Length: 116
Ligand code: AMP
Image 1 (cartoon, rainbow, N blue to C red):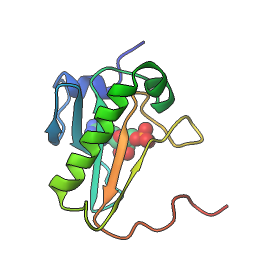
Image 2 (tube, protein in one colour):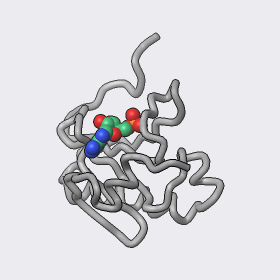
Image 3 (tube, helix red, strand yellow):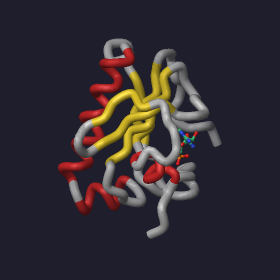
Image 4 (cartoon, helix red, strand yellow):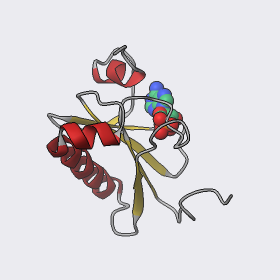
């Protein structure tokens, strides 16, 4: 598998606004935020999407979700509520094929998907 942008962020070859790091995960602000708080959480080991991660390493998926919860607490949005999404595949809007959770909040977010 060729390297994605997110491996380069993990390796500190590309700068990012890192807000939290654990042994297995990294959280950094999305460069193009779609909410007042928009943080991406990635596992340091690459899987293409959440389905592959869930099948291969459920414990690592739990780490990603746990880091998402920690980030929400840290950003002060846990109590008001927030959204965690995994865009998956082209129709799901995925553009970077290293699985990542979007943690979105800081304002009412509206409906989950655009109406048809
Ligand atoms: P997705 O479209 O679900 O694959 O999400 C990829 C996300 O990565 C998008 O929301 C982009 O805005 C974000 N992104 C792209 N480049 C960077 C970067 N250098 N640093 C932080 N976020 C980025």
